[in-house]
Amino acid sequence: MRHLHIHGNSSQSPFRRARFYLILIAALCHWMGTIEASDWPQFLGPARDGIYAGGDLARVWPKEGPPKLWEKKIGQGFSGPVVADGKLILFHRLGDQETIHCFDATKGNQLWTFQYATTYRDDFGSDEGPRATPTIADGKVFTFGAEGALHCLDLATGKKIWSAHAKDQFASPKGYFGMACSPLVEGNHLLLNIGGENGSGIVAFDKNTGKLAWKATDHAAGYSSPVSTTIHGARHALFFTRSGLVTLDPEKGKLQSEFPFRARMQASVNAATPLVIDDLIFLSASYQVGAVVLALKEGNKLQKLWASDDSLSNHYATSVHQAGFLYGFHGRQEEGPSLRCVELKTGKVRWTHDPIPAGTIILADGFLLLVLEDGRLMLAPASADGFKPVAEAQVLSHGVRAHPALANGNLYARSKDKLVCLDLGKR
Image 1 (cartoon, helix red, strand yellow):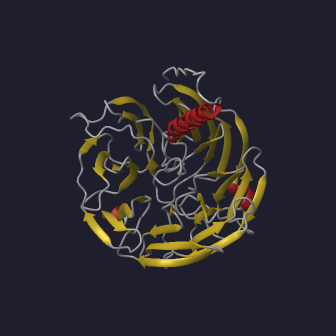
Image 2: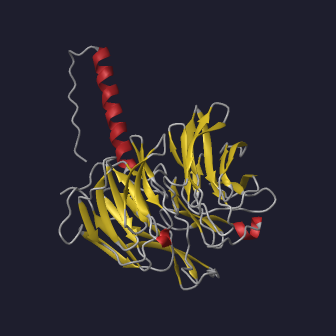
Image 3: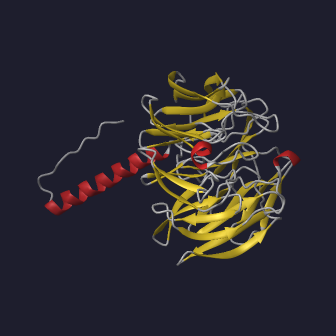
């Protein structure tokens, strides 16, 4: 950081000096906020909307791809990396241990490790590692394992602060593919959709002690993670459960509104996170469910603007929004989706690009950053006029399912056996 020199002027009036210092303080607060916003401390980024706030990305990459700062051979899992305070947290499975590793985000050297035993077995013979991306908040790391083990660790040391277990304490079922809700920190609470019995479909823990704060609903757990927001001056926690949308008061757990939204077939999941734009809520799922945009009105009333299975059906990757347009993957991952741009308030499809593998999308400074399942990284302007990539590189081998992290100009992405750190910054 450059040194800031302030030269006083005795001839200035007290009013002018006060005004100068107020402007200076506001500028410093803005600068600090920008720095913090460039971290990626939880699933889908700082606001859980897939948006990277930094403006420090290059528009052109070398022929061989963005420079690789470091890489690690890793264990099983679909849990994405997260980054805060210069530290990267990776949650994966090594042997019979669910493992949390902390690395220096820039250099890649290991800072600490925490492990505990797991016996999770996937019913379909697939990956047996953790599914849920960790959350970093208030100097703590929160992880939720495939069997329902919830841990709170100290970010600086890796020391366990508290733990809980969804299966043992709330009789949460395994589900099709294990438990996969990324923890949401809201105020003093840690929120999860665990699908437990006896009114514990959604639960909140005291983030500092692990004590149960409240439980609500009988909603089974889907594979979506919650998001919190302020609409009409009130806080709301939004959960896309197996049954549909639930909005709750995150402090008390009081039910605010519900919107049933799920497939008729039993073998289906809701996986994409609700996307909030002002007072609008976008939900999307595959399995002949499709998409819907709801307006949350005063009094917690939900008004449907449009619904369609032909516009933008997200299978597991959450769409992003910019300037009235949604960008996301339409269709089932295993059947070959398409990439689409859709008008937020009408559902009208502006363009479709295919064929393209499934993947994830980050919106960064007006550009779409795609990490595809085949290991390709693509960059294209977020434009309603069409999909026109300006950069592309093969950065990982096939088998990329976890959501990446984009922090301070560096991209952290993992495949089924490797984690890479790529420098996407301007040069």
